[in-house]
Length: 172
Image 1 (tube, rainbow, N blue to C red):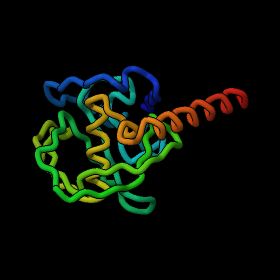
Image 2: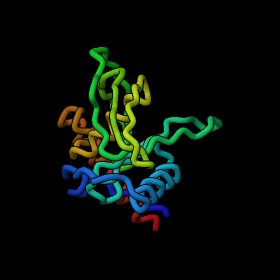
Image 3: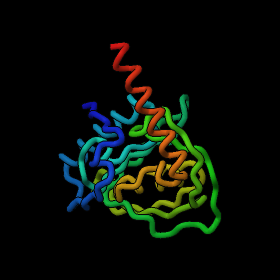
Image 4: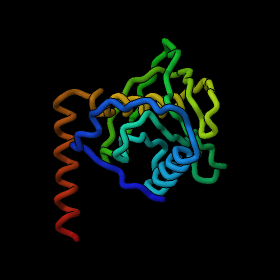
């Protein structure tokens, strides 16, 4: 089932998410709904707060067009190690549509989480996958990628987004 993605300035995006007790069939279904929503929106990651649910749940799939899908469904994910090596790349977000900015993040991370079968998994990720993990886990703590840019740039991005919304509303 496709869910509604909330956008800034929705205050839910600034809340800290709560851990889940474990992954049961109901939660696994929700994770798959999140995945379907993310694919439909053309994203590579989605955190539960982005669909209005304050639970520590994230889905990610960094596979490209013709590649076989490689979804990661994570409950209670936590980064247990970050590389000292950093990398700066442009990021975007489904909750801040059509806005992009360079963000510096650790090049590699090790993340521990419960998968959709309630199994504890530890994964080492590098490059784009590591970036997606860090971006989505930020959402669980009420952090959005635009928080990493200067206040002036952030203000400009929000103004552009508001302008896009006004234009879209006029076209309806």
